[in-house]
Image 1 (tube, rainbow, N blue to C red):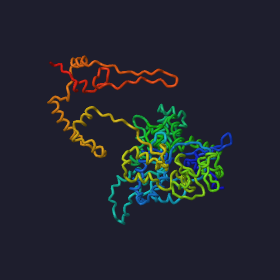
Image 2: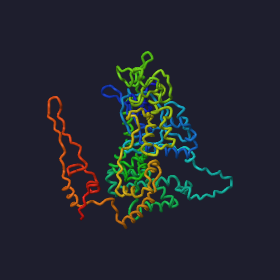
Image 3: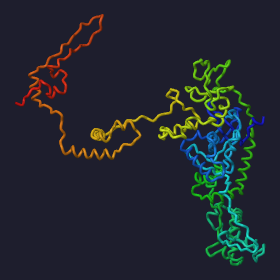
Length: 594
């Protein structure tokens, strides 16, 4: 009964998909809708698999800095399995709220701020235990340190000096340690001091009556007197009295100088009504996160001013009224809700009938044949071959499955118990890991616990890079022909990872180009003039090829015309001639020069 009772402030598992891991949320409110259903307003927590690789690298860097500064168990002392499972326990807090049906709750868990003085193994020893140290903003995709960090450890401890012996003088300079603002052993009595404070309040009330802005904010004498009785007036009066060595006549003359009475105003008087409304709205949204309040709502105010105004605002009637309204709203809302244990079968269950596997992934009416590759396949996480219940996992085309224990681990922690092969390859150097895109893609799959083995299907293989076309310039093509001895393309192709000495090729090309530019290029053959070709055609007239035309009939299809084999001894301009015929290099070349 108590296990199924969920209250405000509990950390719970929510299920939004039958195949994906549970969502981890914190219940902020329990509201009953008009239809009678219960909805939970929750704070979102994100896993490592839910954020980008760039932010994961920042999170790992932050964790490494914490390990270096703390005296806890460092990651180097952990085994590969412990490092793998520890990543599944890390969460990222967010300021995002959402409403989910309370019927989707699947159990309780525990989420705590990372304790630097505690060993990380304590989180692995406890079931359903998670930790967080960073805040994730899903709108702008950033990670920030949690403002509510408990500063415990040697970094935040004060260095206490040794205790002074009797008669030993303190050699420290007292003016640098503290500033004296009041002497209790003054010559004045308590009655005289109280009378001076009354005079200071009266001067403050008169100063507000003379000030135009104060007369608008405090239109009545009662409001002006109440503002003059605040701590800022009393602090100024006592400081003035101390600076004048408790001389009443001298201190009173300072309260009312020649220019008029001194007006002392604190943050409550300095802030306008619109600024006060903005502060209350920001406080409702961010709580006591004064940095965010200043950044998003009051950037023109200093952080000191906002904090001082907050503690003064808590003494006003406005704060008391809001506190009563919140208490009344909390009384009208639900405090707890009972959710029975979810007992419906998961669609990813591999149903069994007489020991034979049945439907997978919720396929109705589909049974596996004996030649199905799923038969005899071990668990993808622990490699067990026997389990009272199997669950399909991953893409349907890969036919992967998990045992009951590993399936529950997957749903709760968002990964596999054992490191996958892709994670082991990521730790060891390989040629394919040189490409940053491939490396990030493989690490992303390994981090999410998804299978990456290639089963022959293009969908299961790792996504390759986009194909590209390398277009070479004409000078590059020419250098390949000129600098064959230095380039040696065949040997370079056999060793694609060895860089080519392009400086030597450029130098040789410059030398060869200088030699070629000095002497004209010699061609193998010179082209005959047009008169020689005309004379040759007059001596050897062209012959038309014999065309065989067949009579179309109903029995045989119409055949295309067929050309007879041309006679190479007497070629015409209509026939096909080779390069030597055109240039007069054969035995029938005529000489027209004489």
